[in-house]
Image (cartoon, rainbow over all chains, first blue to last red; front, top):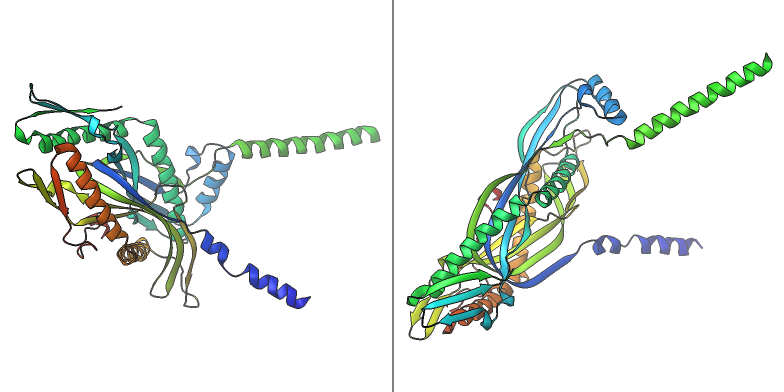
Length: 196
Length: 204
């Protein structure tokens, strides 16, 4: 009985569950990246003020904070990167049409798409002041701050089309310039259009 | 009189229960308290470019490092991309043939923006009464090392070689399809360039 229990304990502690949590994917793509945007986000950590508290829970936290000795203030920031690209695998020979009489080439490119490239691995500490008997801001708390900033940023990008619109406009301008330079070598006028 | 006292007791108990229920309701419906305040996002930089991307990488990596006697164990999800700067590629035209040399790869590695892409599992100090709190710069130093090792892993397991081979194929197909000419793309370093370009100078 004891041996069975020991065996079960060993099987449950072999670390396979931990390994399963690590996911990896390496994917072949055929994208032409035409523009990249860096968006910066800042957050502060500070005691709650009673006059700014909204609701019972915040008021309770503000009272507890007011009783603590010392200050605990910090500001952090990092950048998130978005990019605009066209999927070159969707480009077909029919997308290029040449009018020899007018000396014009019309290129119809796939729609410009946007995606998150990622965010800075490091966090920038803009300000840090922890005094008195207050606890230092640790790695776990910074990770929570980053998570909150990330959620807020993604929501902001979704709610404000300004970010993606600027990125797509820049990408379209770059596509026109780039493909115009490639195709317009022999005195042709190049018109670049998009499928969307 | 005894009946009146009983009614009074019941009324007091009911009042207390009502106050508790009301407080619990207000507590539950109140906004979650947080000492963190986020500010509006600002566009820091917007750059046009022409970069061919042939490989996207999404990988969870363990973060294990130490600064002095302080240790950090975490899990990070990385987003990587292998790209080739086509702005600096100058095709050499000879008759009906275009000759192009594949430029050095750009290895871009960032933290993913998916939820829970960085989770701190444990921090500790080997010293008996030492603080386990890592400063931001100490934590950033550990993470920078993880990024560097991940980049080396991409070269070692052949991801860069695969990205360069795909780039040769994709660039040939793109230029041939657009120009109608014979395109020859040569790769001087099929396994990758040693002095690769890292993501952002600020993150080095």
